[in-house]
Length: 226
Image: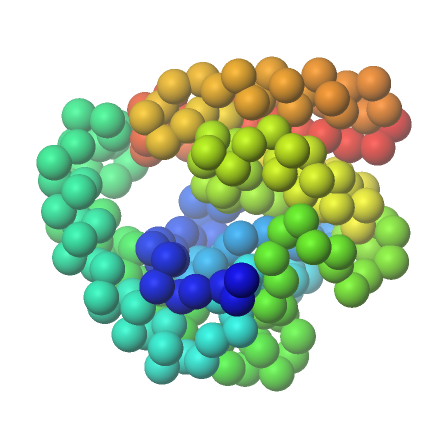
């Protein structure tokens, strides 16, 4: 089945959030980084403008700027209403209000849209859906990132996650996944199963981050080649 934009809820995050979520340091600036499921984040634009080397992969990059902008507008009110109804599930310290949340997310998505067509031309935004094979040889990237996708949606099942992470590990020397809970902020058995699967051949580590907006979503899974 072809990927449907109507199934997507666009939600953009900034470079500052990425750096906090994934414990990215100044030393990582010189590494080749792949972002999987980046969606309409401003991370790619901000990072590349600052001299980083980021390539983002997402099936939504098969759509036009106008189509993505329309979808963002379609779902914004729905998402903000859901946030208002579930404020107790979030930590309102770094982002302190619903108004600030909307400003941050819309700011990131507008910056993404501003950069999208140029980034497409430059090969920074690539249409790809995990766990399909990527058009890159082994170990093409130093670090692979997954923000708010892998391990968050338990309905996708263990088989999907094993296949998706395996493909990420094929093209990346190291993979970082954030967060390690489901949509209800509960620890997922899937995380334990994924760790068990990959720990025999890879170094696997759970690290605490300085980022927590969704409650209990403050841990990072790092999987790297031995």
